[in-house]
Length: 566
Image (cartoon, rainbow, N blue to C red; front, side, top):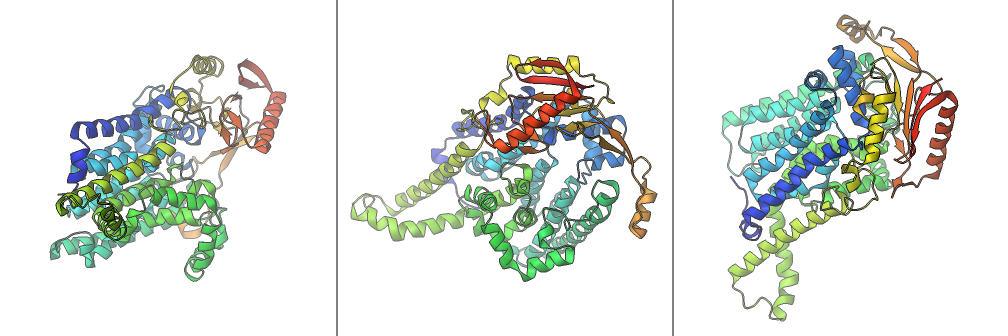
């Protein structure tokens, strides 16, 4: 059932052409990241981390390994099992390809429900592409789950909607807040159902909404507290519980109470913080501006997005408000659905503006006076949808890595240029050198440059980002002595079993001076094949020089090198 007419757009946007465009963009969304992986343009952060953990889970299933990435990913064991079903050389393609399919799937949902225009808007929306091309993250699961949540609600399939919202928290512990927010959203529409449906709902549906909302609020809030205050501090590698105390949110207070007090009692501080941080303003412009701010016509539909939006706006950690990363995944479905269900209102507002300011000008010049009122309405509708579609497409062309974008045909961004998707003889040389010179044994440790990730390197117990394990040993944590009874004791008493650690140096170091320089996850503003942060460049090259004093170079060619511990 359509909630607005898109006749004008569908008349101009012919069926075959529309399907071709949407299909081409969808296929690009799936296959280009695979090509990027094949041409050695993936990264340690975060595909390499996940590959290493999936490999270790497949070898020795253990709950603590699921927390090695710093989050509570309840789906780690399932993905680890699926990862183990593929040959080691093909397993990473499963991860990236399946992620692309799940991100492209909503285009089909929206096409069947709302037609060409909405499907085109979704598949052109830049945050979708940022998630597909940012290697691999569990966050991509948020997108189809939330779309099914909204579409199920429109069909009054409350149980399915509640299931999808509950499943969110299993993706990552922070998404338990989004589960809770979905519960708040259900609670509101229970009593304000006209905000979602045009017809009144019966008592049975209202009872299901109320029960579902209470379930999501209790389970989401409970799981968030359990994960951040107990699971992560015990099984993970963090000492403090929750968000407080960390560098990202520590400015709000030293406890959860202080943080909430700052947010509630001093909102002006937060507003000033946002306004004084250009990256946060850019984040908002990309998220809302690329949809012409139309989602703001239906603010209630944005409630499920509020936790992720709050994290981006409250955090002092740049990666949380980086619009080029997976942290926008939680906004995509709420914003696109609010956009979709607000089109009629937006068109009416534009119609009023046209009639008040533009029509008098056109009438005065006898441009539209010869058209009937019905023809003028059709012209207005077609102008609205065409101009809106063109606006979103311009954003796509400016920012995305698709074949119709400016960055694809430029060498400005290393991971978005067409060269990132076309394997070269040099890539083949590097792959061969790593396979020949770095032993495949899982106990052989490797440190690699962030932008030089390869499954042959990742499939081992200790896989590190440069320069870890070079000048000082890295402490490999063994938590095999921790079990569920110890965890229950920790909840009751706060006592944590001591972790056993083994000091390990990197046996091999793999570097490439012709790709972006990184120290850990911090890059050097690499544009057009050059480092534009000279301080970072100097520090990186100093580390390379230090590494050469402690390691023997066993392979070096065209800026690529493999070094072995002396």
